Structures are given as structure tokens and as C-alpha cells.
Image (cartoon, rainbow over all chains, first blue to last red; front, top):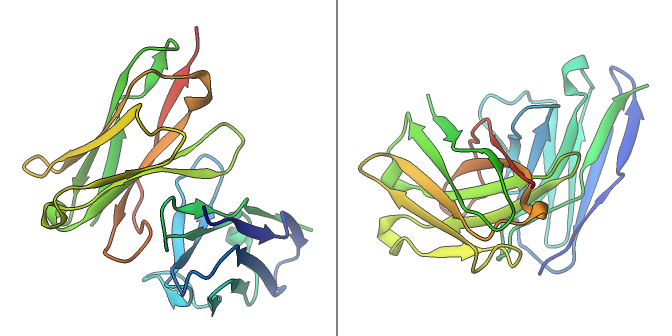
Length: 107
Length: 120
């Protein structure tokens, strides 16, 4: 199985900050990676697909980069509605696997 | 508008069975693969399994933790995907989500989830 190591597990930041979350795959996955945002009690929402493509309707302050084994999600200027938990998901091979999640909290 | 609605969750005893449904609307259901995910209380997300479209013979893939116990199927005439869960264990307690899976992609749209509680 491909292991996805996500860091940090939690992050405290302020409105307007720039934040970066990283996922590392245990083997190469090309660009077969998505980023998801989940708020308490809600379903995950896809933000980024194919590692760097912005999902329709998602604000442009979200961006993704990377290929192979190293991937990043960047939020350029945090907004109050961005405080949530973020997950990466690899779909390069079965079983699909998620990172452990990053809980983004208000400082 | 793409909509996915899960149903069928509830309280079930260990060793028993339960079938979840995922009713889709707003897109041509038969053109897409469908996946099931779950999230145990207070835990992260876990992929459960996947069914391809009829064009790919509706073949399936499963996580090791559910293989041999869970079965995914689909009825394109009704736009419904199913998750049949047998021999349930307490560790299967989770919110179960279905998701639409475009070709070569992870899930794009997700349902709101349905809670399955396995307890005596």
C-alpha cells in the first residue's frame, strides 16, 4: 500500500496568513492526488485535483503543487471560513489512501 | 446540480448485515465509477471500495479491512450505488460516504453521509 505522510497534523494561524500543508507519498504517484477540506459534521469537499488543478467554484487562494512523491497545498491568505481539517488522497493505486489530516485552527 | 444522498444507516449488532444506498441525481450516473469512503468517530478518512461503470464491466476494488465482507453494486436504471455490509464488526462503526469518481480521479462530489453504529 502507498503511505501518505501529511504534515503538520495541526496548525494554528491567523486570518490573512499564508499556510502550506505537505503530503509525502511512500512511492511515486505521478500527479494522482487530490486535496479535500472537511468542516465538522460535514462531508469532505474537493479543492484540488490532479495535484494542481483547482476544482470549479473553489477560491483562487487555494493552490496545489507537486508530482511524484512530494505535494503541497497552499492557502495564500487565510479567510475565516478556511478553518477546517484538510486531507490529501492518492488515487494512483489501490487501496486509495489518505493523509492523516491537518487541523487548521485560528490563532 | 450533482447530488448524492446516502441512506440505510443505523444501529446494528455485531455479526449482522446492513445495506447502504447512494441515490444520485444531476448527472448521467452510468458514465461514472462510484466509491465508498468512511470515517470512524473522531478519526480520519478511509477508502472502502470502488465500482467501475458498465463500460468497465462494473468491476470492483476493496480495502483489505472489508474485502470478503462488503460488496459494492450498482443499478444504473435507478441511479443508485449500494454497499452491502455483512459480518459487521464494532470497528466498522463510522459515517459512510459515497462519492462520484470521474475517470482517472479521486472522488469529486460526496454525499452527506450516513452513520452506521455496530454495537450490542
